[in-house]
Length: 69
Image (cartoon, rainbow, N blue to C red; front, top):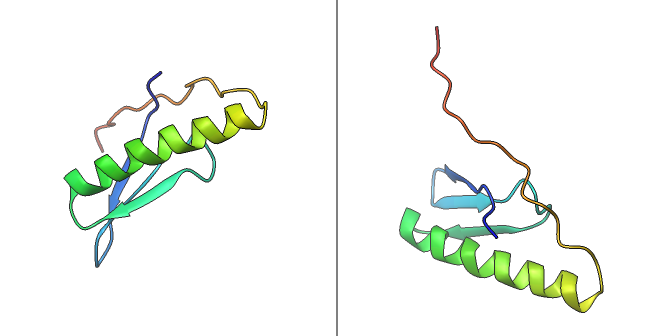
């Protein structure tokens, strides 16, 4: 399953979160590092949900770039 992931640059690093998986976050020094970290966090998050017998959320977030007028 694929999930939309938001990566943001902060003053000191990069952070990432998954809107469809509340609490699923990661940080890294580079975009590549935070991408790898969030991929691992998603797997860990989904595994935890399965172990608890909770449903796996559907991917419902839609991402688009909107041109500013």
